[in-house]
Image (spheres, rainbow, N blue to C red):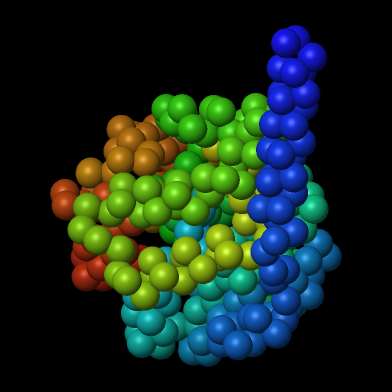
Length: 308
């Protein structure tokens, strides 16, 4: 009986492992051909290829940095609104997301800041930039501004990560060795679907939802998400915010009061660290104010961009 149970258990382990492997090798690898068919440009950087879209305009280029699980398509209306107003705008997919490569690397702040530095050095080699970071993109942006202050003209933070917040149970499990990797590969798409219902107080436009889910069809997305959970500092950046707050860098902070991802209460912590920041709170917006209250959000951004 014991011998039979042993072999059944061994068979179960092998089956789970083979399924784990198949969840990656059974999916296509992101390539330049796939990016081109989807209308994305691609640029080879030090760690991998990055998918991006650039609209030419006037003035200091604005770079949009997306968050934890949603790719740069989340910026669709902001990208258009800023360019319609005459600005040069760049949006790109973080490594592991959207149509960018999924390198075999530690997905931490160093990786994302390096990607942003490589990208802007190649596309805007002699220009300063204006950074606009959403959620984890805010944490990346504040880290970039801290490390490369001479590259930044202005900084826009929308519900940025970096201060204490509650970690969902699923995220805690995903951090566990081995089992977390398997659960991540099994549940990545479902987790993304669930998150899209929570990040806005209205609804994610279907075209944005479709492209966001498309990223899960390619190998490496789930592994990148799990690695980010394990290695990206999303709750302990108070000192970084404070250092940036001591500089003369103009900062705009925007937060929706119905945010279910990063609590609106954290806005007070960011404002304490950056006391000179302009601040817009939005009564009816969730985690993505650019979707929930685009008119007010974009009007405030454009006013901030036009300020001397």
